[in-house]
Each structure stands twice: as C-alpha cells, then as structure tokens.
Amino acid sequence: MTPCTDYKAAIRAYTEATGKEWHPRAALIDMDGTLYDSMPNHARAWQRLMREQGIDLSYEEFFLHEGRTGAATIDCLFRRELGRPATEDEKRDLYHLKTIYFQEQPPVDPMPGAEQMLCELEAAGIRRILVTGSGQSSLISRLSTDYPGAFSDDDRITSRNVSHGKPHPEPYLKAMELARTEPWESIVIENAPLGVESGVKSGAFTIALTTGPIPQKTLADAGAHLVLPSMLALADILPELLSPNH
Ligand code: CA
Image (cartoon, rainbow, N blue to C red):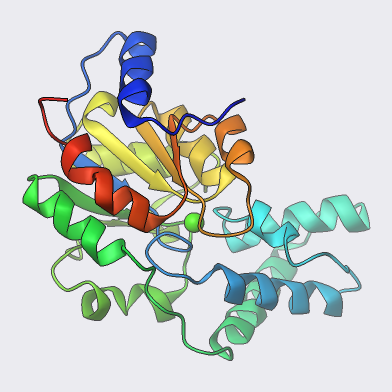
C-alpha cells in the first residue's frame, strides 16, 4: 500500500471509511520508539539474548517484533526458530535477562520532537494516555522526569493492564475506556507495524512515524491512516491537524 502522507487526505479517508466525523479528544501514545529513542537498545538486548539461545537474528528483525510483550516475543521466536513453544519458566527467566541487558546499555534519549508533540496536544485540549506493551520499569519511571505532567499515573496502560499485547487491539481499547472516548475521538501515535495493527484494529485514527529502520510502506501495509517521517514532522503539523477548520 502507498503510504498516505497528507493529513487532510488521511482524515477524509478515515471519515469515509468509518462514516463518523473525526473529532479527536484523546491521544493514545506508544512509548518505545515514539517517546523514547529506545529501540536500538532493545534490539541489541534482544539480539544478545537470542544469540545466547543459539538463535542468530539480524538487528533489524527485532524492530518487527516491537510492541509484543516480552513473553510473546520469546514464544514467537522459539516456535519459529526452535520449532517448539517457550515454557513459562523460559519466558520469565529470559525476559528478566533481556531487561538486564537493556539496562546495561547507554541511557536512552527522549525522542526529538516528542516534548513538542505533547505540548501541542495539551494546547489543543487533547488528553494524553500512555499505551505501551513494555513492562520496562526503568523507562516508565523516567516519564515523569522527562515529560513532566504529561501522563498522570492513572493515564497509563502498560503490559500489567492487558491480557493481550499488541498487535491485539486490547491495549488501545483499554486506553479508550480509560479516556472515555470512541475510536473516532481517539488518535493512536505509533512507530511499529504491530503497534499500528493494534491501533487500526481498535478503530482509532492511527498515525505511524518512521523513527527506525522500518520503511514507510511497511507501516502503511500494517494499516496506518497517516505515515510521517519523524516525530518532529508530527509535532510540526499537529496544530493544523487538530484545528477544527481544516
Ligand atoms: Ca513502539
């Protein structure tokens, strides 16, 4: 599918497809690769962990699993590469090890443009909800420092709040329940194909950003309504995108 990079055309197509007027009241925002430039560290930690299990995969491979819970990623790779599911003990122990490998790496930076994006949402009166498949407490606990006031403790959906991680729609459906919004009143902001799939299945207007090696076309194929080249690009067009007069 050709990526839609024109926000007016994207909103028109969304309105036509859903039959609902788009009227955003809440933004449901992914964390890794969206609020933080954390995916390179995650990919390196996963690559090291899997190599130790005899599973040698490319660095880029792990960007395609982004959004899954840790347990689901381990199980998926074991089934594909070893021809068997991972046991509950393996899922727990290996994810614990992956968390250690992630924490051993250099500190992760906030994504350029993310603060501006959050400010533009606030200025437009849009409620901000964090929606992450991560249980990575080292990053979640930094949110209040890096983005003060953006997400209250009640405005967060993490791996602890859902039974099914992305690409299942549950994380975004739970976030809408929390925000008390309908899909056509919600914007999903994502960077990964599985996250985009989750957002699209939830029915929300889903914006994908290319912040890593995933090509725009892959995000469009996952169903993204609008694909933009960076977080800064989104932050720059947000005032117009959220204006009721476009
Ligand atoms: Ca992500």
